[in-house]
Image (cartoon, rainbow, N blue to C red; front, top):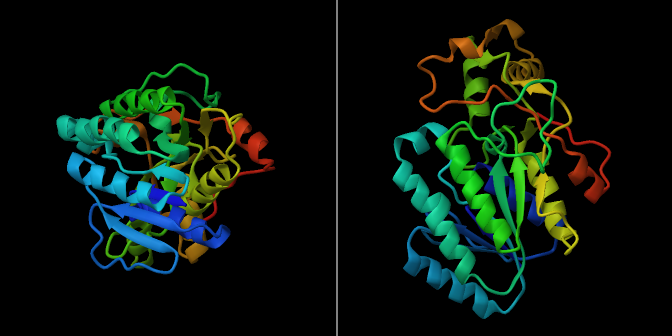
Amino acid sequence: MYLIVGANGFLGSYVMKKVLETTKEKVTAVARNTKGLCDTERVTWISCDISNRKETDMLARRVHAVGEPLNVIFLAAYHHPDQVEKHPKVAWQINITALAYFLNVIENVRCFFYPSTDSVYGNGDVSYHFKETDSLKPVNRYGRQKTAAEAMVNAYGYQVVRFPFLIAPSLVPEKEHFYDQIVTVITNGGTIEMFADSFRSSLDFDTAAGVLVQLVEKYSDHMPQILNIAGDDDLSKYDIGIRIAKKLHVPTERIIPITMDDASGIFQAKRAQSTLMDNTKVKQYLGLQEIKLSI
């Protein structure tokens, strides 16, 4: 059985989709707000604020009573770097304290996957792709919190997967992703500025979720404790914007390239300019020839 915490978020929605499409497993889907989310033959929704210990205890007792080994994917996080910078104590409570408590109360775990971020690596350049064994030098508070969270998960003997910038249409009702905002602007004749000199090993949510579910299904004691789930291509957000414009058959001139030097006032938290990742290990483990952004 899958236990997906944060199942109604951007990535969580795609993970749910992949689990239901590619496995026969049942899913216990956990979200802080489950309004409008209905149970099905294979999916049971549970409302739980993981920062509330009483609710977390109730969740742990409920899934333990089922008696099945759990494939846990823990997606709950306070993850926007600017919001983490603005509300560090709230972010710490969710990203560190609540995670630590959850790790200690959840039982009957077959495998536990904690999605992290390329932000833990810090600033790189276009000539290097970070490997899982590289030292971590995050440039902002969000990256430092994720680094601490990774250490806890690994100390418990569980798995960490690091994702790059992810983009795709939102599957969450009434909640737009950046992708949807781009589409709205450029299909209505507007322009949008996107960084042309900041590079990521970017992926779409569907591909990223698919690789994660494959890892869960092929979990073994020999799996590396940290894996980069990243795309093969080095892409700026401007590159991605151009791809979206071409897909929609709208003029690419509506995507305006800007540089990181133009970012003054856009971000509160410092950003790394490039955090390209090496995905050799995950491709070898799963026997994949390529991992590509698809939008």
